[in-house]
Length: 303
Ligand code: NAP
Image 1 (cartoon, rainbow, N blue to C red):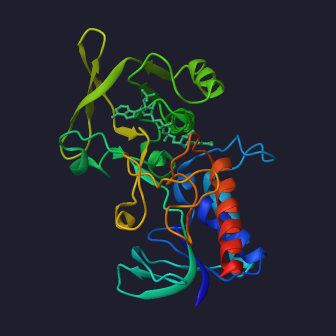
Image 2: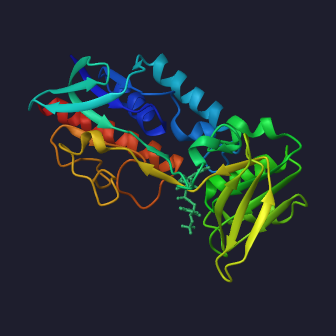
């Protein structure tokens, strides 16, 4: 039996693994896709204390290597459900494998939100993308658009401005939610245009994206902008439905837990973007990973 099973190998989950291993507990991380979580899509991290610049991919790789070197095991399987057997828990994967452990940490993060527009799914991979660092290079020298006003959208736009001919940033308000410093950098770039108070209302092109319609919310005017790519960066939504029967979620699907990272279920903890919290950042994900693992170790020691 493993001491702690951590579900999710993003910043929160890998940090939890590091803290669990350093506390002398065995830790297994179950990850449904690739390790690193959302941060692998961030071109340049500038707000992690002590590191002035690092790419999200490099950050994730270092974190993963650090956890594995400490003895944390990682299996690439999706956790489909948890059974609470009191003093131990069973984690059942989508492949019907069962793992037993003393404590669980849910660090499931969040998934990219989609616009919900007609043809969005069909054009995904044909101009519509949710990851500028993954797909930006395909549009080198082309005109592209970024939709969103948070840190992801601004970071994506900065990255794309370095490789694309023109970058439109379409945001539904007149002010960005993301870091002021990034907005100021973008405002100075000659190949960046802000399209504010506007939403993307239609996607055109056959078989690839060729243009988008953008509607100005203040006067209803529709502008057609020819672009080869639209990078959608309108935030994330949690994906905790599989655990809803056991763990209390809030109205938006986030796991209800405070700064102590304890859920309503004894022996099940949570960390990172998947839980209710005011600030979702790398630093807060790492802090949660440390807290959840420490709380889980204390819980195991009391069993
Ligand atoms: P976010 O902060 O939630 O921002 C989402 C943006 O999309 C907001 O500007 C929002 O508009 C807009 N939006 C939401 N739904 C929309 C819709 N249906 N149509 C059009 N626009 C919509 O998401 P994020 O930028 O992905 O960032 C997620 C978290 O990760 C944040 O806490 C962020 O700070 C963090 N992050 C950190 C770093 C870093 O530390 N370096 C890098 C990237 C992200 P409104 O402003 O009107 O709500």
